[in-house]
Length: 572
Image 1 (cartoon, rainbow, N blue to C red):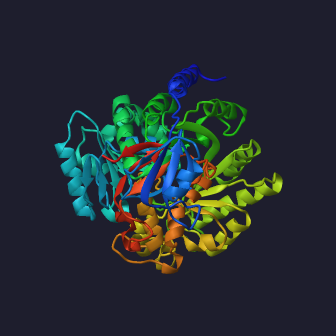
Image 2: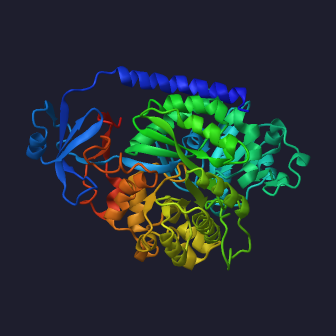
Image 3: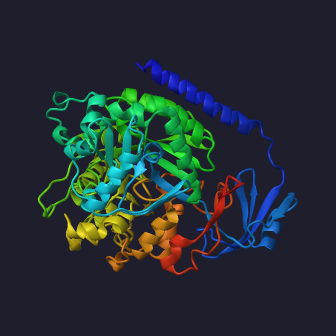
């Protein structure tokens, strides 16, 4: 039985998306083609650069030099547009794993983080060290409205020292305070916050991922806190403002396609209509890939599949649900709660499971047999062993061609695992930013230098025949594909140190990982990812050539704007 509230959400979403579809259907088709000329066009389909691309009715119809493109149009009417004559055109950049709802929740918070952030509405300076962090936290609370919640994001124990309920109580016993971890997978609450959330010790007694005395909710325990915090952090107007800022950030990154990788996990019935409205008007498309846990129990059972199928019927050119699903293995890399094989963590702590291995297998089996493409969050080498075993079992039980089973993040893995992944025809959507932010710190704490320098396996995966794309998992990394490509091609840490240079991606491999390979990992390579006749007219417009600048400066290339389905969207 589908809940009445879910039916209302579904009907409301249908009306929003139907309106978009009718608007598109009633717009007159453009009879003339537009030929954009550029200093250089990088197609990702041919090593030869072009200088002209013809577009009509949202699609690419020809690419090459200007005279050849004109000739290819025959008697078709066209105009030549020189707006990009001094620019570089490349395929629209793709981020195949980020979380708009999570970003919208986080962005309104007070940022106190180990590294700088730059947003359209503010710049955030890094804070490192226990004393500076605690002072910044105290100053933030002192300047806040005492009648409202104080929420901050970016805390990390290895950069900021210990955190506890008692310390937060020392700042205020009356004002509710939430300190959200840099991983997003955990938070700390003071006594006032626990009181308002109506969470008492007996409510969470025995919960493996809640330490009530410390006010600490982590991994699966985060869902306990989120159930109570949702009215605060997902208040409609605040959530809408966060989504609108996220939309601007994605566009500023030169991105024309994103995948919301775990859609439906944030108070879905209230947030989805806002997401569909705000992102339905974005200058990029959004693929909604469902969080397996969010649409009924058992996940992948008949009822959850029905609910997900109904969402897949909601479709327009900007936002749509697809027959793909996200599952979870081990804990967060930023929390250092990923599951590690021996020797484990050097300080003796242990990782955590988001799904116990047997539960992961059961869920994956249901979705696999229902024909879904499966994406799995995994971070440590022990977690990755489990995920590879799951894929091996699925292929043995129910063989499938071109399954595109994709491992996401893959913070630390081994060469032997890369070989197994290649043999099983698995894909990887990697998070290279872990190396930049955590490579040196994890060398000191937890992993040691030999393993920490191999964070983000890079070239080893490609050599094993594993297709690799890159993602931000925003806000785990900036929603800037060129910056992700820069990390992958340079293997630089935040201090400028190079770790395991033999694992660098080439410039071309790194750029393909945020274009055509990113499209392939979400089954869209026939529509986007290269500048090829018949594909969507999605372009990222650059002021410099990413194949000509010094590789160390790849992330500094100014982005002029984007073209999405033939329409120009300059960056303001």
